[in-house]
Amino acid sequence: MENFNWKPFVYGGMASIVAEFGTFPIDLTKTRLQVQGQSQYMEVRYRGMFHALFRIGKEEGVRALYSGISPALLRQASYGTIKIGTYNSLKRLFVSRPEDETMVLNVFCGVVSGVLSSSLANPTDVLKIRMQAQGSLLQGSMMSNFINIYQTEGTRGLWRGVIPTAQRAAIVVGVELPVYDITKKHLLGSGVMGDTVLTHFISSFACGLAGALASNPVDVVRTRMMNQRVLSGSPTYKGTLHGVMQTWRNEGFFALYKGFWPNWLRLGPWNIIVSFKYVILSIKKKLSPTRLFWDNTLLDIVN
Image (cartoon, rainbow, N blue to C red; front, side, top):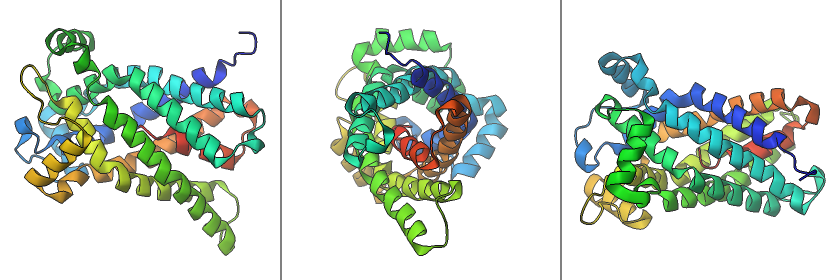
């Protein structure tokens, strides 16, 4: 235990909480847009991200834009802490120096830490999505809703949607890392830009776009699976593939890309806020821009 480094866990958790709070209204619009068309949400209330922000604020009040913030912050305090801490700790198990790290190693550590942390924190994700989707209709505190789900749906209800969450993590990592590398190498090779923070910002936004395009269908199914209450009979969405086919058949192909813009736009600010906060907290580590943004691309996989 003497060699255990607790700092990545604490710094990672604090950075994740700050980023979550700053981008939460965008995340709420994503959830509201993605559940439109699901059995109890057949009415099309929101035409897009900005329309959703305006209508929710006008009809439900500004506080409604932070419906579900309690489980969201709890999720980041647990999920974000475990994810970033495990990622850094896993890398140090294999190599002692950052310059010895390879893409294969970083992908492996990123997927393992993302799947592990999201699986452990899944109950808080289920609570967050239900409180976001139902807003003021879902009465009671976070704890009372947690107890209600457990009593009515059992343990399975709290871990609903955990498989598409893991699948989304693998898809995003597999897409984002190559796109990040290709974009950065193209910018550096063209001579237009040097190895600066701006280069990594542009590369991060580009890989975020690719990741959102590839993962949004799974994200829609994940959101709907977490939001569905299964008290008796079979669920509407039995799994990822079944959910994708059901959504496509009933609502059309583009229904799989509901919430795409807030999904993508949230990744950019989230990544920037996490990067900035993590740099402030770990400034003594003297992380290079390349290493910092490489790590944050991996650590952003399940947000």
